[in-house]
Length: 384
Length: 82
Image 1 (tube, rainbow over the protein chains, first blue to last red):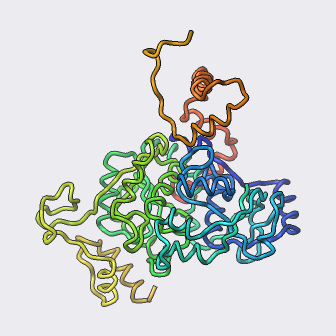
Image 2 (cartoon, rainbow over the protein chains, first blue to last red):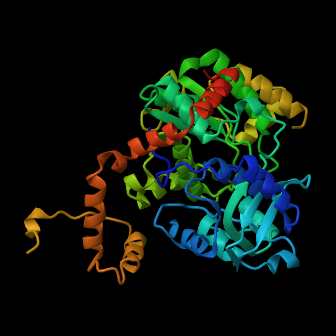
Image 3 (cartoon, rainbow over the protein chains, first blue to last red):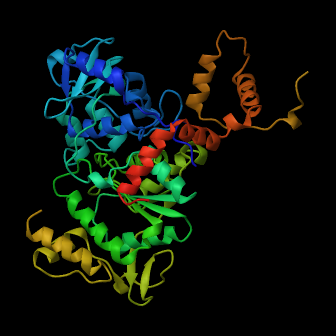
């Protein structure tokens, strides 16, 4: 099976007497609340999904990642994974302190051994990581909404975050690895998505299923921007589709707990590396992966992989062009395989689809399976 | 006398890693990053099992106790994955 990034799948959870002791100590430590993004990051660090990260980034790793897309040990890592101090008091914490990271309900979930406290320039981070400082970009908005003082250090998880949703779909990397091993899969492709599934996505997935042993459909269910389709609606679409149109023995549907950063190319690298930790050998990269608005070129998320040697990334990216149904070909295709004009292609923008659904109209079956259109239509009419 | 150039090949490593290794070997007796890399790679290749990432990962899985592995398999079965 493919080795995790950095060679070792980390587990930063503590148990037994150590957990009991640390949980008691945490009550006496400074308590710092986690944002939704930080909570998702914490969960992923703890279970090894973000291996080799053992905690939130220290200043040295942060600056190295922002400037060079590498950790200080030379390993490729494309986005900062950071924890912000929320108050003046927290901004005054000194390295060496132990702090408790708490959820909305005030439960201490983890203890961080504070190694580094540093102030950053949000505009610089935004420009380097997101390639823009425009306030209209949701990632820029997030950066400007949090304190520019970051706290870094290794974490130990003492309590798993509580989830009321998708319990049956939550698998940690060690679990997907055991699962793939049990199924005898050697070549596993991961599909990342934050959008509802249309025929184009289905086409990419099935192309890849032809030459791999299995497919991990891994919808992102962490924080997304307000006008994205809610995760529960997207999951219902997948359930409906898998039941009728997929070879179930060859597909695993599980949720990806990460928050969306809308970081386009850099986030594509991150999404690939993390899927390697889940045991996947291939990663599907479509058009404008992790993009938003017009901030990134259609294939920027493809070309960025060329900045690294393949063995540094290790997981194999599978690049796909924009896919559509061609009426003359009579099948799904991309510009690589279809010689016909755009007039022969069935393609609808997200906005157009939303409009049709709100008006009670069904998108054509060449664009969206009727089962999916029904779920999306119902959701649109309920105002979700 | 060291090997003739014809017996050597070039390996490419990321520059930041090279710079870090350069710092790492200061005062250690290694005269260059190349010498250090050859030493480490020889050491690793003398233990092929440890050098192979695949094997390392298998070891990681096998480091799970039988009880842990069973718990994971049971959960996967309960959820319908197995």
